[in-house]
Amino acid sequence: MFKLNGYTLGPRLAFPMAGMVQLSYSQTRGAGTSFTQNFPQDREAVIQQVSLFYNGKLSDHVGIFSQLTYDGVEHHTSIDNVDLRYANHLKLAGHDLLYGFTLHNNPQVQDVYNTVSTWGFPFASSPAANAPAAAPLIESLGQQVAGMGAYAMWRNTVYGEMTVYRTSNHVFSPLRLGIERDTAAALDGYNPYWRLAVQHDWDGGKHSAMIGTYGLIADVFPDNKLLTGPTDHFRDIGIDAQYQYITDRHRISGQLNYTRESVTWNPDAQTSNHTDRLHAFRAKATYYFEKKYGVNLASFRIHGTADNGLYNTGDAVTGSGNGSPDSAGTILEFNYLPRRDIRLTLQFTHYSKFNGASRNYDGQGRNASANDTVYLLGWFMF
Image (cartoon, rainbow, N blue to C red; front, side, top):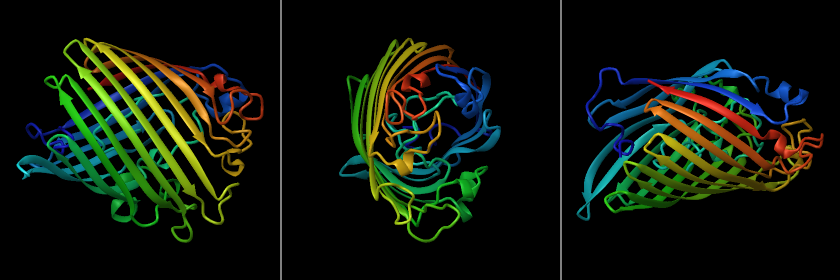
């Protein structure tokens, strides 16, 4: 409820600042010359991320969540997630209606559930590991767009939101501070996003469940330096669900998320198909004991239309030799929290399929399991 109420619960602090540091080490199974050229930080300890947060109450009805991040791998500082809100309450049919408005810079950073990509698992992953080439657009616009929306929660049961996204230029350029305009996505006009969810809790709040849907329709310029001409048309539609059981000693949760993306490419696109589809599925289960010892088990799958022009880049390690975006795998993660502000993580990622195949996926002899990764993380908050 803190987020829905616009980050305004509690007193206004003189300096609502916080920070975090992430130190990590990762090791990928198949680390030959081509891999090392693409990921030179593999098998090295790195300062993965340093972030400063300015969060909390600005006035009785206005609050903010903002994050400035230094990337220790790319050695670059930029704005991270930003969510500025106004929130208030009124009565509708005799029941409480919480409503608000949001300005943010990442689709779904404003979401209140842990099912969407922005807040979903894994919460951290190796910056020095290979990753599948394909992902839905809705997961790829962070810190590149400006979102302006309105939301409401009725009876603490029905949640709805409507937002429009546009290119973060001109007056909205602070929302991509540190990110060059010609490296960010360029949207044509205002592009709609919707969110609808139904939630319920019982047994004094020990149990809670949610089921929802969301969608983004966006027109993207193929050349982000030229904001005119034909565009690529994306339609991302998703469904998600969540269950939580929380007591002082035990915490159990499960999340499901599925996104279907349909793309119609502009007439001049260097793709093999005029239209493509992509399906992304994630499932995760979590157990924590006494808020100190935790385990996460997740499964993920990406499946889509084969398109040599889009995915077959000819590159070793990162490419797809057959032009297919298909990837699948599992993640097993162990967490230990000796204090509330320290999290130590051991994470294992295994790929059964990567960029279109289980064996020789890049056409140059590399197997999917060569991208299996062990990841160690120290997460310190202050």
